[in-house]
Image 1 (cartoon, rainbow, N blue to C red):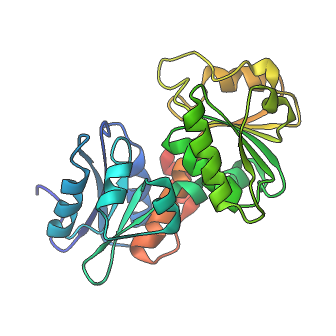
Image 2 (image 1 turned 60 degrees about the horizontal axis):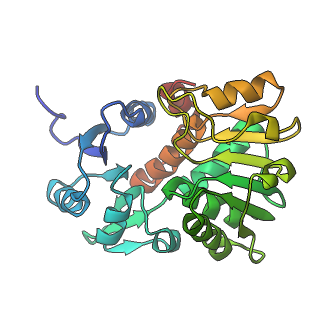
Length: 279
């Protein structure tokens, strides 16, 4: 039989490219473990078609959409309602159908990063200093999550000062305690408790590094949001120097778990999802 079985609900990830996404394996494992009669697939949707994808979601009655590059801003603008962080970030990675037929935009990357940090490193960012490299959508979501979780200082490091300022202002907007975000420099890396690479440097066959590993020291925790490959050149170098360093696979899992719960109202089987992701 072609397609899902009659009556089975469909959810999907949209973006370009998505052919090699791990999301279908992660979500289908979760549906199987919980006995929920859903199936998760991937639809390649090019830039400029995000709003059209949401209209298709309405017509087809899809149970949920995960959204990746380059559509996060487009779907945030096209949804009927949005969470506060989506409005500030102007980006959504999760679309949830409402009971009245409307579509709600959420961003589970924000909480996904903090949950992953707790799972991998056993720490919370509350009261800690963070050096955050990057100024794009991933960096802005992480800046929000860190500040909302109580980070004392979020120093955003980016070659483009305007992008660094934008991410720092997002940390300010999310802060519980007032202005943790600021534009930083490489000098902030040595003083940080947590160092995050939220750029695409090191992805795929790229062996370049977001910063010199010698800037870091033992006692710090490093996180590289890249998970293809699972060990980037930067992570490998840090680990050889005895620095605790984690990839971005747990963030993928925890943002997916949050989306699963928004769509289904069922607690996500996180360990099942972690195994399916390739941990």
